[in-house]
Image (cartoon, rainbow, N blue to C red):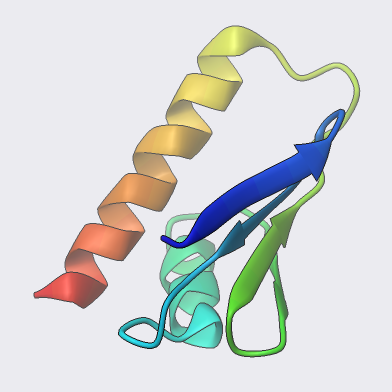
Length: 72
């Protein structure tokens, strides 16, 4: 991960050349979480305004697991 940026709940994660954002997106989608890929370097997440801390913690775990599965 090169950068994580956002405004409010709109968050983008930028990857270096070792990971393709579309591969990360599909790995996350396989884990039942909705994200979009912006080009081949950035994934974007736009959670609902009623998101709570346990859901955010679960999302972080899903993203970490997806990235780890692609880094092998």
